[in-house]
Structures are given as C-alpha cells and as structure tokens.
Image 1: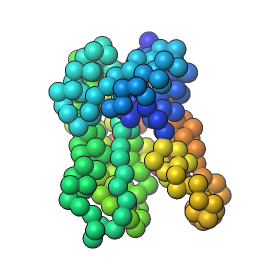
Image 2: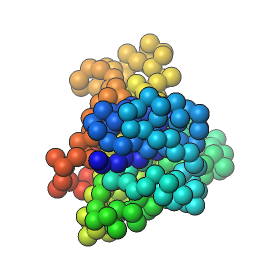
Image 3: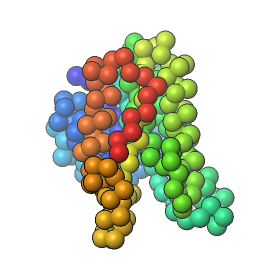
Length: 231
C-alpha cells in the first residue's frame, strides 16, 4: 500500500487532498500544527493517521516522518496568508509567510527525499499558487514565497531525479476553498472573479485533488519539474 503525507491537511484544500488520497487507497498522514483538527480529519479516513508538528521545524518534521514509517508521496500544502500592500508589510509578517510557504516546503521535501532515496524513489508535489506566476496587488509576501516554490520545485527535480524522485508543483487559480473561501462570500468579488475565468466558474478543492492525484500516480511517471496550473 502506498503512503502519502499531506501537510496543512486539517482543513481546506489539504483536507480535501487527504480525503481524496484515502479514497484512492493511500495510507494517509494528516499532518498539521493543529492537533485536534488533524485527529478529526484522520478519524474520518479509512487509513488515516494524525501527525502534529510545526512544518518550519526540521527536527519535528523528521520525527513525525519517522513515526509515520516511510512516505511514497509528499504533498506540501501547508501555508498562511497575510494580505495588504507591501509598503505596509511588517518584516516579521513577511518572514513568517516565507518560512511557512517556502522554507517549510524545503524542510519537508528534504526529509521525505532522504527516505525516498533509500526506498528507491517517490513523488513530491508542492502546492504553489497562480500568484506565484502572476502576482496580484495586496498578495504581500505570499506571491514571492509561491514564486520561490516553483523555482525550488524545478531545482529539486533536477537534483533528485537520479534517485527516481519526481518533484512537481500544482498552482491553484481562483479556488473556493481554504484561505480563499472567505473572499468568495462577497457576491461582487465572486462574480468579478468568475467572469475573469474563461471557463466562467470558480474552481473547487476537488479540481486540485484530481491534479495532485494525477501527479502522484504512475500515469505521471515521466513528468518531473512541471508546474500544473489549475485555473
């Protein structure tokens, strides 16, 4: 049975990915800093296990990965958002966003890659964002961090390909889930954003789940270093 660890899996897109992976037959590590929420999600899965740690702490990450007992697929989904104009951004907020959205991707991916190297391969999927490609006003440090995720993904794919580790990214567009969901409670914002999408609708968490499961599967066996934009 293949195993998958999903970071930031207690809610939003991460929760949906964990559920989708469980339905696809994976043993799922539901990793989040919020212990009670992670346990709640894991308890609703057929083969789920709650893992609690701060993804910006290398020692904690290594410990929970060892506890889980190996990983075939890692989905780096954990993230935070601080909106507002850059000119007013506090440096501490900027660092926190970069630490959680970019540094933590490196920390978790490195821990997983060391395990995968010994096992003979694996798949890492980093969740980026459309703003990492096309920044929008008031994205703050989020756009910079997500742009960094794309570069880091390509770098990892180049260095770790010789270990049969595939590394790809998924960049959600306008998705009504997780941190973006509150924005779409405003009908004006929702209508304007939906109108800017050629397909005429806001995306769902399930749209991201399907992309992640594809990249994790053998159907994507010759895809690495790619950024799949789901928009």
